[in-house]
Length: 374
Image 1 (spheres, rainbow, N blue to C red):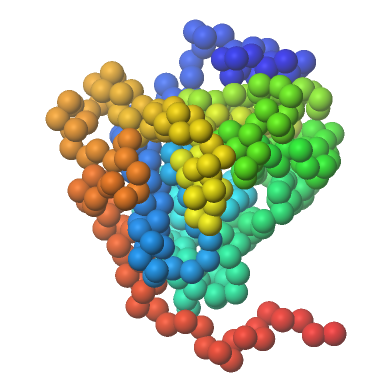
Image 2: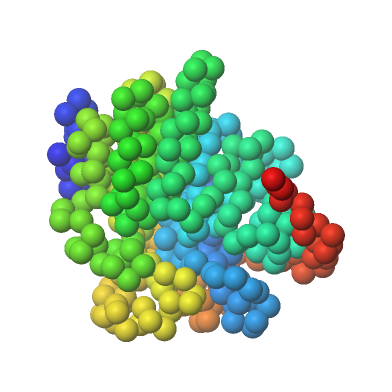
């Protein structure tokens, strides 16, 4: 079974002792602050895209990650540069935030540049997809980013294959794959995790439990309270993280990563969070009808930025005046301004957006590129 405190309690895993040292205890003050800064970056990316879409400057569907930033930031921060990730549609910041710890402007880091990702969003030259597909349908093999698809749980078998190949080569990389809680009902989810468990593959499956699978509430999708219990059937660890607390997500994911890297096999990390808007921006109006307003207010009341800020204050890593300097927490995209974010965050996104806006669209002659004829 999986304990409420989120410790792994599968049949072969001893429950964590609350007095044990946590992965976060090994972080320096500078690393705590960098995690905090990355929360602002993920939030601002989402805010900026929402505003651009409302201005009519973007096409395609926007899948907001607003209020779920701690899941991405906490999951990515402790990975090694050569570890693999497999994002989904709501994880757009992950493409440029992978290995961000190596330096935001480091050209050699193992992640996409902000220019590449913005060019993808704006369907311009310089984007991985070159205006051919949905924003998030991208990947980059040389940066160890598995190509995203819209097939629910469809990248888990790919992640298992990547981990298997690496294991055969004698490597110890970990593959982290992100999935919504609704995807756990898909057959491919179980087939892939069963395969990973049998072959003891280092696959960490993140379940972003934001309480709604499109318009289906969790109680109509799974009879148990914790989706991490899915792990029990495979004899693997099932961790539960507070998806609003970036440091708790970091702790649980790093425990899962350590388990996998040591050769013990896969694990599941359920991050309990809440989707701030509709499934996509096309669903915002409908979501306001199928989700009770008090539930939305409750779900958004624990803002990841505010929770991280409280931790930093308690540890003495920031002062009260520093805590009030930028106040993006508790606000919708329309309520925020650039002054609510650190200037380096605003400048970083501006660079990516400016690059995309100034870039041309791919030439019409490219229309048949990558098309295979029979």
